[in-house]
Length: 222
Image (cartoon, rainbow, N blue to C red):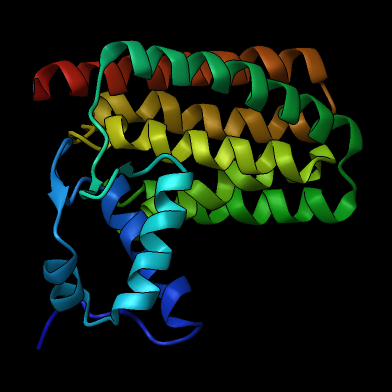
């Protein structure tokens, strides 16, 4: 039985899109690797039509490069690109967090506390597996959820996917991870206190520290 077969639920196209997206972000395919359509069909047990639809969508999201008449390739990695992604995260995610603090309601506060609690419990395991990654993503999405712009959230999510291609090149030992985990809790405190200025400053610092971790992983990988 193929362990990479698609999970149940949703259309075949949506399922292969999400499965491939996660595999690309977590580095299951090497940077620059050419993806063979037939090999992907066999690996994920999916038909040609939904697979091509998912591949085209992933190319539009920037997680694949579509080569004219030659299929698809995993994008390369570079220090300059990581710096560019980080600059955009600082601008867009910082702005979104400011708006969320100003506009978030009581339901957002409850959602944020719940997301932070689940992430904190996962932090204690010191196991940065897929369950932790899912909770970490949900936490950051919840932070900016009430920013008032669906497009802004889409751009931020795309940047996170691109950023995580670098961050997940290596493991984060507790000595590196702990300061970032602590900042998660402080971000919640500042959000609940409606401290826009301090919240923005901490978000910027959080992104910069995450950049240093991702940059170190990239340099070790290359």
